[in-house]
Image 1: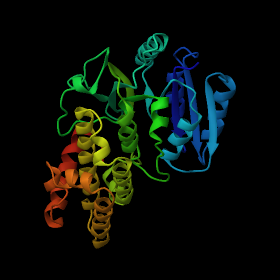
Image 2: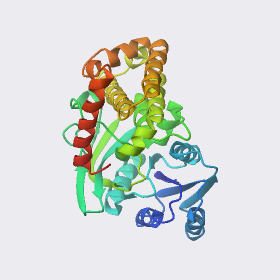
Image 3: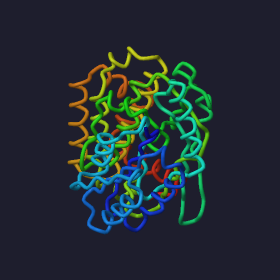
Length: 342
């Protein structure tokens, strides 16, 4: 039995995927399963993946499919995973081997004791490879570490704090229970991944280890300003998908701090989607945004009210265009300077 399935979605990844895979192979091969999903690449990605599969047949599996985008690759990994736990590692990033060994040790102990957490949170590192600087994103202020805990023990999240896919190691059964299917041909679907399965998580665990190294700075990354301007409809699609996952009445059945965190996440992502719309001019962008809000309000009115008419989102998502556009531009410049993107 494999403890952890790691899915690596690849599209034209030949130039950098070796580092990602080689780092994973430094741990005990009995513990991991690596699923490389070739998403219709036009370079030598599939050839490289097949070589790993031939050399490590008990560890590496290759799925070759037509291009469907990052979410499609994750969906394929989930459908074919055999590990107790599941996580994603993008092909231009990597998992730090010593931290991965520590994670696997915790998973192994939990399985042996028949007391597995539903999700294990870990830290990730912004790797600014072009200037050799790093910044670690830690959850130590919010969560107790190195033990199972519940949502009631979690501290309040600040307005700018939330988890990324890089921090999350779900039980595979939890993801499948959530029936999450990520949209195809769409960027930013990791936000759905971080939101939807949490609804089913009761037992939590946090390890303060720098597991995921997130390479940042490539000009074709989805977080650059030019790409965000072009892909605003994708961000709206993602947020609409998140609204469609649960009603407010369903969220009310969950522990208070889980409900508050999911609403907190939805507010942040709605604000981000609004910013994507307002990063550029155009009447069509504003029409698309108005239609997006109408659809959400009609399909999920109680949750709509708590997102658009409560807290900071009552301002951030309802500003007139002539105010919103410069405000979001300033906000992006500050964020981009901190994270060194764009």
